[in-house]
Amino acid sequence: MAKYTIIIDSCCNLFSKDLNSSKIDFHVVPLTMMMGGEEFVDDDNFNTAPFVEKMTASKTGAKSACPSPEAFAEIMRTRDNIIVITLSSKLSGTHASAMTAAEEIKKEFPNKKIFVLDSLTAAAGMDLLVLKLRDLIESGEYNFDQITVKITEIRSATRTRFLLQDLGNLVRNGRLSKMTVRILNTVKIKLICGEDGKGEIKQYGMSIGTRRGLVAMAEMPGEEAGKSLTPDDQIVINHTFNETDASFLKNLLESKFGFKNIKVLITRGITSLYAADKGIVLAY
Image 1 (cartoon, rainbow, N blue to C red):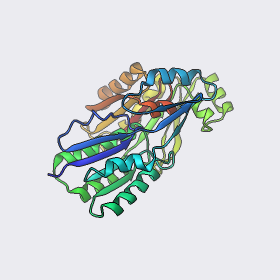
Image 2 (cartoon, helix red, strand yellow):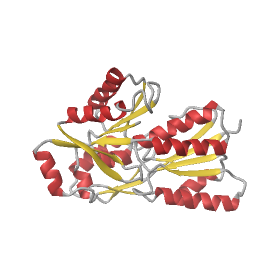
Image 3 (cartoon, helix red, strand yellow):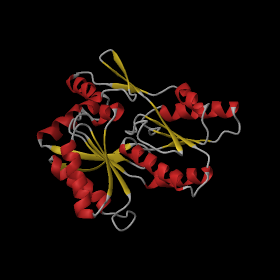
């Protein structure tokens, strides 16, 4: 069987070492973050903890920049059966960079198989797509074209939801108004947001307090238990240095709804930039 190459950007919270498969070469192309005049590359050596501390204390917040097309092309030149999964094109220019790279490499190597998927999501949603893609490849049941069709179908069914403790960076990046956040903090309301199925962010609910918010989040895949979701279906939880709430959510999904295959991942730099300290992201 020909070896596959999976390329993702660092809004996915898996690291280069995480897909241990003899059938797959796994590569992470890092985004870059800027804060207080400093530049940070979100690669496998990046230390997220001090970055989150600096960001929390910052009055200006942090911003991100997508990888160049050449960052993707460099990997594509020496690999085959390439499948790229990127952060939503509505949130970043990363997908455009990957598409530009694929077009250039196809000119150099017309017979090379390359497929670029706009995830239409971020963070745990990307993690879930990569894990599903790994399973499709390792099954050995499908050829390249069949795999690209199936992962596109899976993307359409993937749901991502998040609950944030610190909304400051969303304010500083123009995603929420200061007045909205002031009101939410005053009455201790937590927003549950997620992708809208088209790659952008929308609100799905609100609750008073974190625990009630986590219960409401668990109810979302819980409503699909026994329908579109089975106990063995993969679920992913991301957290930004918040093992307590991540464990609470995981235990709730297991004990109340019977889900067995739940992977918990700490956030990399880019997800931490938007999820901020103590953020929780769920994908199913």
